[in-house]
Every structure is written in C-alpha cells, then in structure tokens.
Length: 512
Ligand SMILES: *[C@@H]1O[C@H](CO)[C@@H](O)[C@H](O)[C@H]1NC(C)=O
Ligand SMILES: *[C@@H]1O[C@H](CO)[C@@H](O)[C@H](O)[C@H]1NC(C)=O
Ligand SMILES: *[C@@H]1O[C@H](CO)[C@@H](O)[C@H](O)[C@H]1NC(C)=O
Ligand SMILES: *[C@@H]1O[C@H](CO)[C@@H](O)[C@H](O)[C@H]1NC(C)=O
Ligand SMILES: *[C@@H]1O[C@H](CO)[C@@H](O)[C@H](O)[C@H]1NC(C)=O
Image (cartoon, protein in one colour):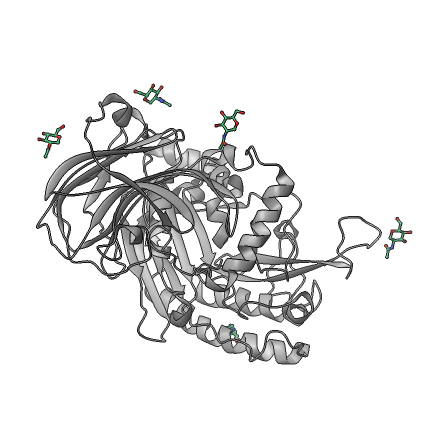
C-alpha cells in the first residue's frame, strides 16, 4: 500500500476496513430440509409442545449450519415452513409464533435474550449464526397485536405473518420480511398492507429477500432487482413441482438468469408431496442444484458465487420480430398446460423451423433432434393470456416440450421422462415484456448448466448437443401490468376463480 493510500486509510479507517474486507466472491449454502411435521396441524398445542417440535427441526438445521460453516460458507438459507411445517389454522399456528422486532432495534438475541419478550427461536438462530460466524436465513412466524377497532385488524386482535429472518455472522437480526403473496390455503397468515422491500448490505454484496409464491409477482421481487439493485436473492420456499414449466429448480434457475442476479433457493424436502428442488443459481448458469424424489434425506449444497454478478441486457423481442414467419401449412391444435390453453404445432421432422402464434405472441423455433423417434412427440406451443387458477397472473410463454404420449391432446400434460436428445435448438418470441425467464429442463427433472445461453437479441439457444433427453425448452414471460385487466367484471372473475378452486384444489400440484 502506498504512503498516501495508507494515510487515507488511517484518516478514514472505517471506510478502509470496509474496503479491505469486501469480497469479490463468497460461498453460499442452501439446505433442503426434511421438515418434521406436527402430528395434526388442525388441533391446538401448548406453547411448550410447539417449542419442542420447533427444537427438533432446529436440531437438524443446526447440523446443516455447523457443516456449512466448517466448509467455509458465508451464508446459509433454510426453507419456508422449515421450523414447524404447513397447513395450520390461525389458532393452531399461534403457539409457534414469536414477536419479531424491526431490525432497526439493533438486536443480538444471543446476547440479550429477553429484550422483546420470550423469543427462544430467534435466540437459538442468533446463537447459531454467532457461534459459527455465518449469516443464517430462516423462515418463522411473526405475531403483532392490533386494535380490533382498526378496520384492518383481524377479529382475533393480531396480525400473523409468514416471515423470513436473517441473522448476520455476529448474531444480529439484520432482516425481517413478511411474505406478500400468500398462497391459497395460507389462511393462518396475513399479508402486509404494503409490500416490504427488504435489503441488507454485506462485504459480499447487497441482498434482497422474498418467499415462494412471491416469485411470480412484481412486488417485491422485481423491484428489489430493478430499483434496489440487489446482487443476490435469498429465497426460502415450500414448493411443489408443476411440470412442464414450474418445477422448482427449473423456474428458480430461470428467474436468476432472466433477472441477472444470484438466487439461493432452499426448499422443503417432502417427496411424496413433490416438494424437492433446491439450488444455488448464478445468472449465467446454475452452480449447484438438488432434486430427489427417492430418499427422505435433507441435503446441503454449497457453491462459490460472484459477489456482484454481471447483468447483461436482453431485448426479448428483437430477433423474433425481425424474422419472417415461414408460411407453412402446419396444422395447429389446442392443448392444456397447467390449466392454460396453448396453441401448438407438432415437430414433424428430425430438423426444422416452426412458428406458432397466439394473440400478440409469435414463437419461432429452429431445432435439430439426434433422432426422430416414432414413440415420442414434441411440439412448439404459444400462450398469451391470463392464468387464473391458483392465482391471477398474465403470461406469455413460448415452449418446446415433449408431449406426455403420442396423442397430441397430452401436449402440455405433466411428464418427467423423455428419450430424445437435441443437437441444437434456438427459441425466440415477440414478447411484450422485458421479464422473460429462460428454462431448459432435461429428462428426470435435471438442469443443463453450461449447455445454453441467451443472446442480446432474445434467442434462447443451445451451445452444444443436450447432455440428456429434453423435457422442455421454454421462454416464460410475465406481463405484470396486465394481471388485473380483463373484459370480465371482477365479480365474475372472483366467482369463476372460486369455482375453479373448488374443482381443482384437490388436484393442484402446486403449493407455495
Ligand atoms: C453457542 O455457544 C455458547 C457458548 O459456547 C453455548 O453456550 C451455546 O449453547 C451455543 N449455542 C448454539 C445454538 O450453538
Ligand atoms: C382501541 O382503539 C379505541 C378507539 O380508537 C380506543 O378507545 C381503545 O383504547 C384502543 N384499545 C387499545 C387496547 O389500545
Ligand atoms: C427491442 O427491439 C425491437 C425490434 O428490434 C425494437 O423495436 C424495440 O424498441 C427494442 N426494445 C427495447 C426496449 O430496446
Ligand atoms: C431453418 O432456418 C435456417 C436459417 O433461417 C436455415 O439455415 C435452415 O436451413 C432451415 N432449416 C430447415 C430444415 O428448413
Ligand atoms: C376486450 O375488449 C376489447 C375491446 O372491447 C377487445 O379488443 C379485446 O380483444 C377483448 N379482450 C379479450 C381478452 O376478450
């Protein structure tokens, strides 16, 4: 260090220390946790029974935290509902909740346990962070009493929130986030009146946080990236896979790439409910991921990441709007993927160029298969419309997918194995949004790190022949501005939503 630099450091020593200790890379950990569930979440339990169950889960989380710290991790993310499970009523969740203060109070629960009442879970998480010198991210329940004469206050006199907490490596509470977009059936919790944009700075970049179903909506998720400019998203989740487009590892890795951020996703491990799929995703490629339908074990993942990953700007419509649609006499057909009616064309040859359109969206595909099998059908599909089943959100999707059987009516149905590899593919669409999430999913629900890229003119293309048979190659676009526009009256929408929910609730394979 030069003399003048040293003097500057001496004069502004705090700045100097920050500068010296800032890191270009860091080691991230996520833990897929096989949560121990209460025996019956609809029956009330005493506070001590609730704490005993939570301590059983914290014992397992402790093993993961200690192991991650020993392997050099700077931060570990654990899943949504990872401390007490899911599907409670307002009353039966109550004994599990703690009052979680605003982090501005500057509190290390491990050093000052009873400052905000009886908070054993926060104390234990704080001590785990402090004792192991690691940032700990966990999901738990917050309770806030309110005055029932306030019209927003629930009749039982309290707000209950699905909450993420972060303790830094000294055990200090540095973030508290209340889930905004509750999933249907999460009646035990309230959503905050306004979305919360929760960020914190570390020597290894700026972090933002949200939870599970939040990933499908604009706030806080998109705003954290576009306005708050976070480098890394922390994402506790309890995610049930929905194929073809919403498998956990598939969609979460696509969000990291589409938004140009690191994304740390920790899922519950509950294979009988299709809850598995955690990962550490960088914008250019997944770094580590886990998907396991076979064992009952939890899994710790670690990977190094850039503290400040580079963003590249993509114009998602540039290429697709520049090419002329080949005028072919391809026979189009309609088929359903996760309750949405797509327009499809069948891929008839071993190689080809196809276009399919729906409403304002036209999708273009060039591809070459390794072989054209007689027992397998692939199709190119387009969807431009409002999805209204377990939530209301406007989609534009271009998708190459394997049909479940050779019957075209099964195109879009959930299928998790395939036999056809692709030598190359290039997919693009005339999207009306800059929020497009590129997905490539291989047979047996595997990602394809390093096998594809997105060009600045909006093509999702292969860099090499796929390492496995292809389930889907998809551009999943979101038009947030159209989520609440429709020609139907809102009463009608609410009514039809309720009917749909009654019909499909037992078969929705998607919980968040
Ligand atoms: C943290 O360390 C203290 C002191 O060694 C110990 O008493 C405490 O049990 C530890 N707590 C956790 C959660 O690791
Ligand atoms: C609740 O609000 C009412 C009306 O503002 C007030 O009279 C009452 O004292 C409040 N109760 C509590 C417990 O704060
Ligand atoms: C994207 O490209 C299209 C076609 O080249 C162009 O019309 C449009 O203005 C571009 N959009 C942005 C946001 O640059
Ligand atoms: C598809 O289009 C590309 C470029 O536009 C062209 O080189 C190729 O020959 C076409 N393939 C087929 C099978 O038509
Ligand atoms: C809604 O109405 C407008 C004009 O009234 C029409 O152009 C548009 O196609 C309609 N949209 C849908 C989804 O029905």
